[in-house]
Length: 204
Image 1: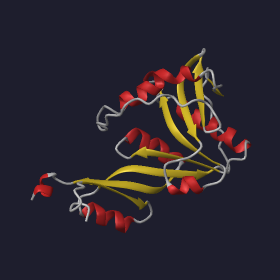
Image 2 (image 1 turned 90 degrees about the vertical axis):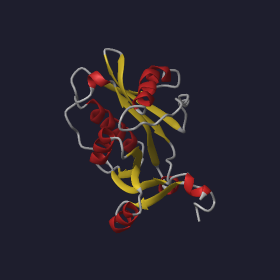
Image 3 (image 1 turned 135 degrees about the vertical axis):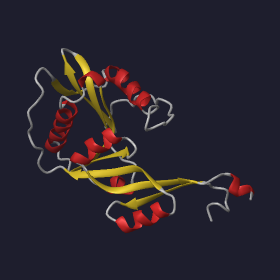
């Protein structure tokens, strides 16, 4: 039906636990592309904090501090194994719909996490007391030091004290670093699979 309508790029969302259906889609040429994951904020483990770093939420007049990291994130999408060309969107203003948290060293922002009030999936839209991670990046020279994990822990602590019961994130499965990081803290519940068919089939 899709091909007869002229559509040759196909995408579908599958429940992450349905491995039999995933194998079936794989057999017919689909590959995984995205993952949606969530966690119930019940207890946030306290790990050792990296020495010399501080964590805080930005005010509405400070979002320019994350602009370099925001652009770095989209430059990262251009590289292998992504090869994703995306225009860099404007930073959303701090409001009741979006928030920014940062890790700093000597006043320099080295990592950030952006929260959005809604996610991109039907479960996120129906969840109460929910925040969605809508962007995250750490400067390359500061990776591997536990800064991203410590910042995420800080964010979840803040959300828990505010009464938030769930947090979620979506990421590309073709990003091995992000997939490894997010799946350590969040449980996947859907995955997106895609297939592109040779456009010449429409003419045939």
